[in-house]
Amino acid sequence: MTDTAAPQHTAPLSAPTAFQPADGGGYKRVLLKLSGEAFGGGSVGVDGGIVHSIASQLAEVVHGGTQVAVVVGGGNFFRGAELAEAGMDRRHADYMGMLGTVMNALALQAFCEQVGLETRVQTAITMGQVAEPYIPRKAVRHMEKGRLVIFGAGAGMPYFSTDTVAAQRALEIGCQVLLMAKNGVDGVYDDDPRTNSHAVMYEDLDYGTVLAKQLKVADATAISLCMDNSMPIVVFNLLEPGNIARAVAGERIGTLISDPA
Image 1 (tube, one colour):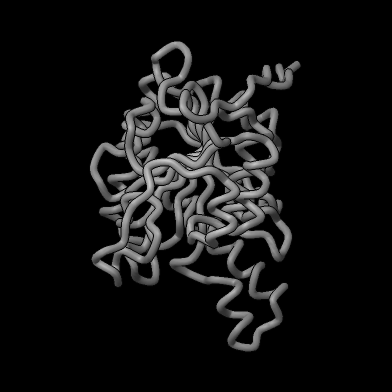
Image 2 (image 1 turned 135 degrees about the vertical axis):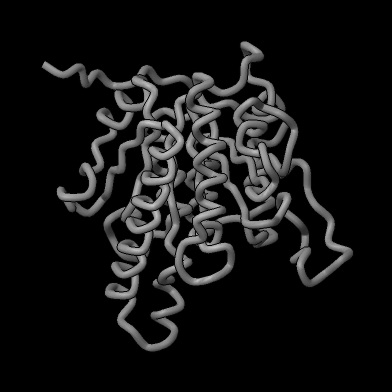
């Protein structure tokens, strides 16, 4: 019989200890949220060079002993909300977006296995020929065996963003932190740094401030879910080489969103 025991729950870390876990050895289990735009390098489709770089960084982290799960977006193919604004039924548009996340998940799996990282894709919509169904305990067992787990197809339901899915999955599989990798942005700013050269980056934020100021980190549902369950969020620049390993090791990079000190 397969061992499917539920993971032992440990309370997520919050400020100021989130960047320095109790044993000083970095996080043991993390969830990494990757946007679809990161896969495409700002264009439609998949940029092989970028995805290969992500795969190499993930291999280094997982082979170093950290258990890692990934939630991928699909914005480089479809964005449900944008298609809905153009007149498409929101439900159909969101399902198209979910299929886009599966394409990104399979691309990441292919590049990870090229660099020697054993990988499993789990999807919220059953598609047995290409992926396993989402089963939380099975995902945990994969991670305990040193495999990278990639979650695709969002929540399997319309009206839920992949940011919200990342928060939910992180909580359900017992992660210590939600790492939100951004495409070329170092952290959370008070304004868009790409259009305002005077924008200031926050090093620390609490969930309430993010919601009150409507800072563009993740949707309000995702932030509220993390706030209700004290799940710390680290927002950092994906395109800086080695940043995934730094975030996992607990180094002080990007912006920490957590409970008030």
